[in-house]
Amino acid sequence: MFLVIEGIDGAGTTTQTERLAKALTERGIETHRTREPTDGPIGKLLRQILAGEHAPTDATTLGLLFAADRADHLQREIAPALASGKVVISDRYYHSSLAYQGSEEDRSWIAILNQRAVVPDCTFFLEVDPKVAAQRRQEDDRDEELFDKLETQMRVAEGYRQVVEARRVTERIECLDGHKSLDEIHNSLVERTLALLSERAS
Ligand code: TYD
Image (spheres, rainbow, N blue to C red):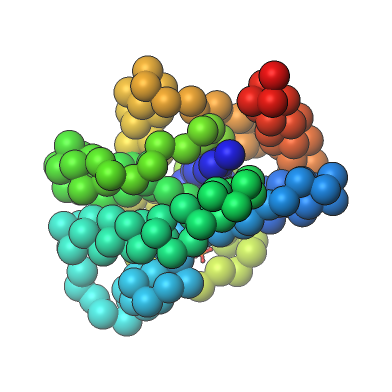
């Protein structure tokens, strides 16, 4: 089963991906935790770009690179893990490209670049107000990244709203209130994942 966790910067996707993978592993469910940008060659380049090391880089270039990183991710890591029967949980996937690059580039072109990417069995979208997320990022004292400005995050949040609304018709996307406590969100993710697994088994 292939699961994805999505949301704007500071929504808690990384924390929740880690905690969900740990909770499933503890229940004896073979799990593979992964992320985008990946730790592969294109993902490493993307992290340098996000840190501002190769500025300026436009949304067109980023859209192509994220799609290439994803194709590499699928063939190198996701497909083999799924084939061996593991539950794969990815911290971000094509919804990020549609929301982030799709708020500066033509979203339908970004969708075409990602057409071959396997559709996840379920995407959990953590909904958080961009102002709350900005405050969390400040409290965490994170290094400044390319998309950190509040106006950008507000555009991305609107992008996610549109993407979730449109994609929900053809794929499974479950929205969670990202303002709840880490434990409440975590418990809800575990519960929904176990329900999906038993739905599949029956
Ligand atoms: P993030 O997931 O926050 O990772 P880290 O905690 O290591 O900084 O950062 C990834 C950034 O990349 C985030 O701002 C979203 C952005 N991104 C895109 O713009 N498009 C994409 O397709 C993906 C996967 C991520």
